[in-house]
Figure 1 (cartoon, rainbow, N blue to C red):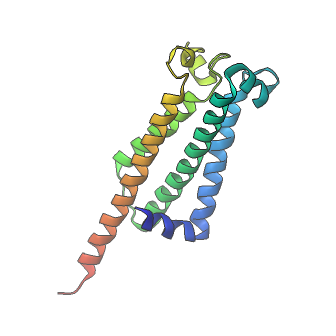
Figure 2 (cartoon, one colour):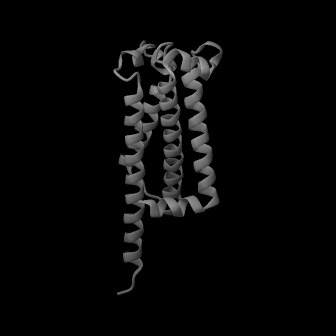
Length: 166
């Protein structure tokens, strides 16, 4: 699985896509986490939710951002190289991003996106205050990266076998 990721990461175009996509996801996640917090401060978020919860939230948000950047770079690489459309890896990837954005927020102050559907304190009712949703998001993103990697390898294998003279 890491072979294709290293190939993609070595190319400037896809490395830049991964970096910008990961940065956009990290900033979005941070903003959604502290938007309802007094003065939009991560320190007040830690005071309200505990230091360990805050550290775990930040670490998981960074992991999601890195995985999203890789996912986006692989998705664009596959589109450029293979021109194939596979619905499964897109659904898993966008599902992971969607769950990550839903889980971003302050459990005790309200979650901006869940507030749109009438559940502003929805994370507060979960046993781990939304950490479980972040773990599900990471699982979806890992699944989508695996599926895209497998799709690229299978497509390239098929192209090599088709072009090989008998």
